Image 1: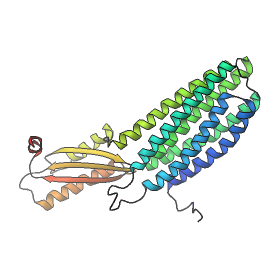
Image 2: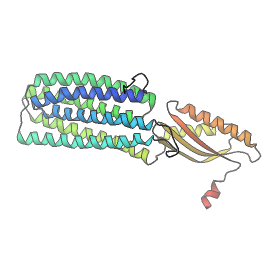
Image 3: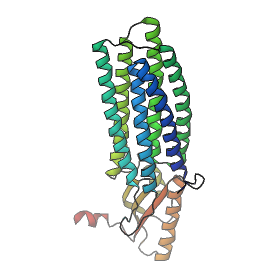
Length: 301
């Protein structure tokens, strides 16, 4: 069945474009890396191969995470995005370790780099293509607030810096003749890749463990509640994120004599204010209406 590009979501388009870009870069870098013998170019080629695999996997993750909640998965499958981020980060760390090994191995065996001029041209082309892709992915990430696209954007941004470092390495080797520079730059790239992957894994694990929304977002939610007329207090505020959906649970306290319909209308106003905080995300808000502060009773139990 043919894929109708116009009908698929922006997130899926981003993963398809990222995959196509990675495939083109893989072909160019592998050929030049093998011919030149540059550990930095080969490191970049391996990273692009992983980019391709990861972007293809991200397409699957985004597709599954966008499925509607059902009887078996009551809260949807948004956490697939977090799982994808953890897997992506793990693969990136493995590539970083391999690149580090290649750099050390070249330094020990004193291998030389060939065809420096064409290698430099290839890396300049790679930087230009990657820069355009990063701008596009950042645009999609801001528009969709997708953890998968954020991870992809961060990954390709890492590629942008590493490609710049590789050009520096190749130029330095060309004019100085010191091959050790290639190994040193390759090692620095590897360490940077590993660190970036750690940050991706950290965010994914945080979502899998139902970590709360960031403090600034929680503060805005609290302000929305406090500034709603009719609410005398609140407690048991809990937040978490799954995919592109923010979940909020809270108990609102009212005057004991308030009518249920009036309390319900005030609760609706609170929901509307919370929705306005971040229009790029979906919200699932569960509000419990209390005629008095019963938080102490729960603590005793």
